[in-house]
Length: 317
Image (cartoon, rainbow, N blue to C red; front, top):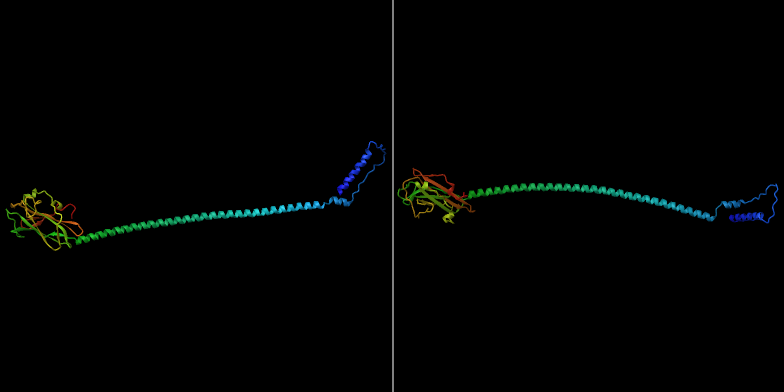
């Protein structure tokens, strides 16, 4: 409305000016009188109406204000949500870091516990090993003790063949008073007995008689029983005496029985020596040997000569 009044007012002023400036208009005489001033009167209501905004503009302005307000609210809400999200994320990071730290601590504690368990296991293994070694030593000592006890028992219970005496034989009889006769074959009985506690098995005897020059010329060793073609001997129970007889012969190793094909008569020279061995086994098959060697002295008795290890097979007790 105000705009319309202003447009009309402007149009009226233009028309008035056109009238005065027309070429056909007569000249205006000028005098020295004061100019005429036209005065425009605008009502206050119009001015108020001009100053005041229209309803539409108010609505638009209110709409813009609401938009601004909602935008501000949205920004504030977004900021608050973002802030809380940041707090939540930061809290999660802190919790995760704490969890990782706790996990690391737990893992370290677990490793330490495992190491302690391994150390304890190693200590237990070492202790068990030492105990096993000690037990093994005890077992070895016990076994050795048992073997020694068994050996001592066997030695205590073993058969033992001993030579009882040596007697010259005269006219088929042996006696301590019998004397050798020049020109006759010398014959000596050697009684022996098992003085042990158990029977002696596979008993094999060897006896030889030498005198005078034969002793200096004798150089043969007693061969093994296998070379005598003797595989099985006799069994000799305890407390049961036996007798073996030695004869003088040209070769006492080859011919040591009464059936010697080359007997040798005594020429009156001395000394007269009887020697030999007795081999036998016990219940466990252990082989033993009893060597003997006697020399007749001037009084007619027989003296014991220290036994020679060569009389027994090698390695035999």
